[in-house]
Image 1 (tube, one colour):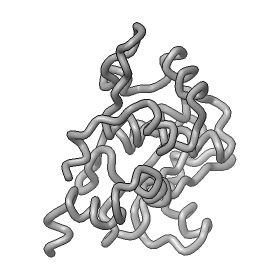
Image 2 (spheres, helix red, strand yellow):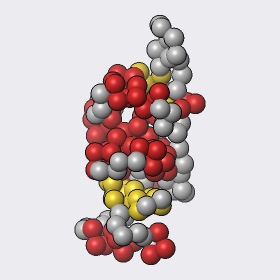
Image 3 (cartoon, one colour):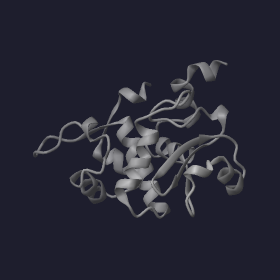
Length: 174
C-alpha cells in the first residue's frame, strides 16, 4: 500500500489523531495546519474534505504535542511539520525513521525543534543529544514512533513496521 498516495476523510483524521471533529474544524478555520494546501474539497456543502497522509501525521503529531502541554497551537503545528512535511536523509517526510534506527523523537525547546533517532533509554540521554545552542530552560520530547504506531492502529493500517519497511525498502532488505 502506498500510504502517501491515499487520502483520508475528516472522520479518519479525527480517529487517527484522537481528536474531536469540532477540534479539527477549529484548526482548519484557524489555518494552523501547515499543509492545508494538501486538503482537498470542503468549503461548501457536499464537498467532503480529503486529507493527505502528510496532513494526517501533521495533525496527529500536533494533537499529541497539545496533549503533552504545548499551549501555543501554531508552535505545535510548526514543530509537527518537521516530521510531516520535511525529511532529513534518511528519514522520509510523513514517517519516523526506520525502526532499525530506534525510536524517532521530536524535541521542542522554545522556538526550536529537532528530530532525533536512536535508542535513548531515558530523558537524560535524550537531553544530551539536544544541542546546547537549541536548549532553553526546558524542553518537550515527543516519541514520534509511538504516535506513528497509534495512527497505524487507529486506522487499521497493519503493523507499523510493515509500513516502515515499505517506506524504506533499502532498510528492510539490508
